[in-house]
Image 1: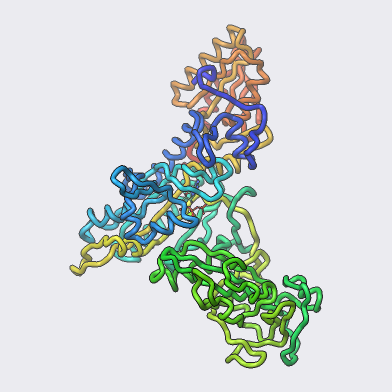
Image 2 (image 1 turned 30 degrees about the vertical axis):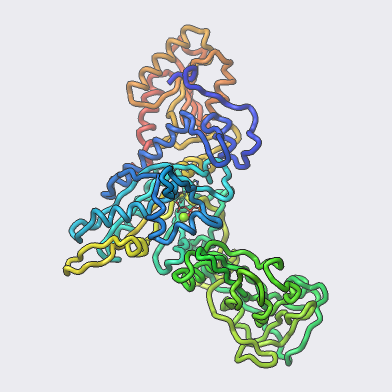
Amino acid sequence: MRVSRSLLVTLRDDPAEAEIPSHRLLQRAGYIRRVASGIYAYLPLMWRVLRRVSAIVREEMDATGALETLLPQLQPADLWQRSGRWAGYTDGEGIMFHLVDRQERALGLGPTHEEVVTALAADLLRSYRQLPVCLYQIQTKFRDEIRPRFGLMRGREFIMKDAYSFHADPGDLAATYAVMEQAYSRIFARCGLRAVAVEADSGAIGGSASKEFMVTADAGEDLVLTSSDGRYAANQERAESLPPAAVPLPAAPPADLATPGQTSIDDLCSAHGLHPTQIVKVLLLVARFAGGRQQPLLVTLRGDQELNTVKLSNVLSRSHGDAWGSLLQITPLEPGQLATPERVPFGSVGPDLDDGVLAGSSGLETTFLRLADGTALDLERFVAGANRRDQHRTGLSWGPAAEGVLSPPERHDLRAAQPGDPCCHDPSQRLVATRGIEVGHIFQLGRKYSEALDARFTNDQGQDEALWMGCYGIGVSRLAQAAVEQHHDDAGIVWPVAIAPYEVIVVIASAQDPQQVALAERLYGQLQAAGVDVLLDDRPERAGVKFKDAELLGIPWRLVVGRGAGEGTIERVERATGDRQDGAAGPLVDDLLDRLRRQRNPLG
Ligand code: ATP
Ligand code: MG
């Protein structure tokens, strides 16, 4: 491709809305243009990158025996109603774009394809002899993200590879899951990405295995906690750790504690010489379910701990989801939601706050669901709010309710693991935090969807049962941008060869010099004939401008045809290392072809 014909439009300045380097660079170098919030045009250069990423994904998926397919993006609401996800995906913080067609039928624009593929499985799969089978596709997904940002990282329209496998038993599912984990590691390594597999939240289904692949980068939206020995890595949403030891509260009979204006753990600690682990704190929340019910929650935590809302959501989905529909949202209980807000002394609430405070509040259930994290329940003695303004109590304990004794709420793991916490597998190890970009997710789904959508088969004993399922996603467009986040410098992008839009750029230093033009054209033709993806910068620009653009674009190799053209010499520059070599064009090109063969597939 000749740069003069390539619709290359680079920007001198950083686009205002781009907050992270990869987003800035992709815009500036003419790879993407924003059309609307979270909606981007992939310009020709970007599309070449995406095609190369897709080709790697396709090769590795094909190698697992998965079958490529293409499923509809317009999906009938009915399928999502049968799986129980329609309300959760369209109501509240739901992210599914949805519409009503001219026949008044509701449709959703596919954010993911479990429903469609399971319905197909119900139709196509009959016998264990057809199993296992895995279908995959590479396609645009639609999600009305609450916070679209960072360009292709969190778009509302983006490209995903999604795969779904069907099995006769959980052992076979686990085997395919392991094969996928390996395929994923190969895909990311071939794309030039440093990615790690971490334990991930497997949602309300519980028990099933799930791993995310994280590209480590400061711009990552996920917090990953890793043990220093590298044996444990998990998304913070899911991570477990040992809580730091509590400082025991000295024995003393229960007593009131005046706490004027002291509503935070910090306030209490500094005013009364307490340690945060000696206090229990209470969060008042409301969980809203698809069926319309709103459950007030009273969540008790040890003062030094933070709530992990993902863990809380999973507990609630398990306990209420079947009866009340999917959990839509958990929000703080606002005074405005109460008929008599003055009865709740926000800031001085204790675990034994009376249900009576909810009386008359429209829309809310009339009793609190009381949950506590184990660390709070393990305290022998503690300080807590007295349910009276500016009053706390000290010397409290858990047990059958009595003076100074509070009846313990339901015990759950609700605390967020924190960097610095001791690790479960070895308490001498501490968790360390890094930021990660989730580029892939593999998941043993089990039978949730097959049961809901009646996807069944006859097993080798002649009995009818629901299929076992796995699902496996890769954010293709996010991956491409994550590669830029990991591979760039002050001058621009530094594409790994395997996914670069072009592998080589031949730059004519002076387009007025016929000798330079002739040699450059010859090299361009020779490289094309050798199967190299090559750009020829034939623009009548100053050499400096062309060098800058080549660096901004991130083309891995640059061949500069300049004053030495008459003698047949050129300069060769490697973008990643900055290494320069001058010499006769022939040997330099031969050596380049050799290097490219190795660089195209780092795994060989
Ligand atoms: P996230 O937690 O980042 O919202 P997710 O867990 O909802 O992602 P999955 O449903 O697991 O995402 O989708 C599979 C893959 O698709 C993700 O691993 C990610 O790489 C990619 N992806 C998800 N949402 C987006 C988005 N809005 N824009 C670009 N890529 C996305
Ligand atoms: Mg995910």
